[in-house]
Length: 449
Length: 164
Ligand SMILES: Cc1cc2nc3c(=O)[nH]c(=O)nc-3n(C[C@H](O)[C@H](O)[C@H](O)COP(=O)(O)O)c2cc1C
Ligand code: SF4
Ligand code: FES
Image (cartoon, rainbow over all chains, first blue to last red; front, side, top):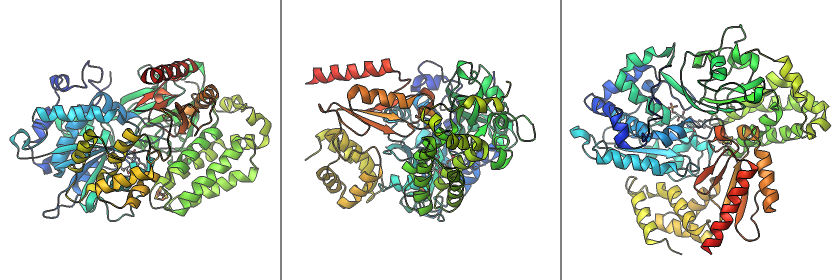
């Protein structure tokens, strides 16, 4: 068995409730942390090497140390539970089944940052989860872990749950802040950064659900011990939500030393490709990161084993690598059509663009239209180059990274599967029949597991 | 047009979560409450919400039109919101949408004549590992098959008959 920190008690009956959670050692980290100074907690988080689990992978301790502390102005911690990146459903799992872990992490983090009012911003569609979180908050409060003068430390803290209402862009931290203020989710131009001017113009830290939950084992173990788990700058454990054509879709906690091959084929994790099919491709870190064909997924371009960690997944850059991203691991078998898949993702980004910047607003719609044409047998060869041009013009030219997130999947699909796009143009009748002739592509990329 | 006593109390509770004068922050939660009570957000409802929060009606319209969960038109008693993004698509969401549409005689975006069902396609709902799936009211229906869809529709019809 590999080390588990976040999900170690996930299968204990009743872990959703305070009594069981407490019996399993819950809230010991709060007791420990409140005897430390806020600075010492930030120091432990720095030592742990924890990187943001929301997608960007920014070092959490460093982020915390940037928060401005102007005299007399309250600061806020905001938990990003917007989880809307296609392929990603790990935060939901944590909140739904082990809500107290997040609440415990939030209390410690609020103390470290000096937030007396902390908000969990959760995507509106997860409509049943606020009840679970609020129940946990009530329980924590009843036992003196929230509210006034927590455990006699003099620290006051309240946690509130706020629902979004259907907008992927509100996962971007400045859009989330706008939304929390009761506005449209239009990302702000940075600087100023939230750490200086966030919600209600107050210094604000926005962190992902998994990031804040990981603070609990960091305090329990100590930053140095936590950093010994994993490899290099990929410390600790990471939740991966696995979906697509695998035998065992679900949420897995990995220590970041396992190979991609083991993750896909081992019975402890995905359990191999479903229905005896072969692996064709995978998007390893949520829809925004580059898709990789099987050969580049299991081995790097240099022929080395690829591992499930930040460095190894991005080995080769965007030419031959991808990213850890949010940990949304989407697996495609040999029957799946990359063009059609890319079309659905382009439609997603067009739907979710907030519309503030023209390259993103116009570009996402244009890419969707072209991809729809190619997918339905109405494409031209020149469309493929046109798509390539459009995505290049979006990337790097927008206020927030949603533009890049829309461009990268298209770029990677063309880079690695250009022959498939051409096949669609050359065989319009066949694509209308949804007979993509894919055995050919799978053979060419077959990897023996 | 007025919230129930329960809801009015809830509104006060929500406003109390924010600093003085920042009651506009309550807008998204209060719109959810409004939709819960009235089913959809009419101009009249939005004006009422504006008056409750002491903000301009335009500030409410701006927000209500931005977020996909707010219904700006009446919808059926049961709304089937089927996810159609990549991970659900490769697990057969297109077939599920087509099957529901055929069964109810409506296209995505439409409501049945008896006002019972609305069919909608939506983008990723964070249930990709349990695909194909849809949202129905507050909850998700996952691992959908044609048989499961039949059973869900059957149950909705039964519940509607009991409630009438
Ligand atoms: C378009 C877009 C969507 C995002 N969605 C999410 C999300 O759903 N959840 C999340 O935690 N971070 C999301 N992020 C990243 C946040 O902006 C931010 O980096 C993150 O919440 C920081 O927390 P972390 O450092 O703990 O990862 C998104 C970013 C972008 C550009
Ligand atoms: S890149 Fe797209 S989503 Fe981001 S601010 Fe610009 S238009 Fe909005
Ligand atoms: S793609 Fe359907 S729930 Fe994510």
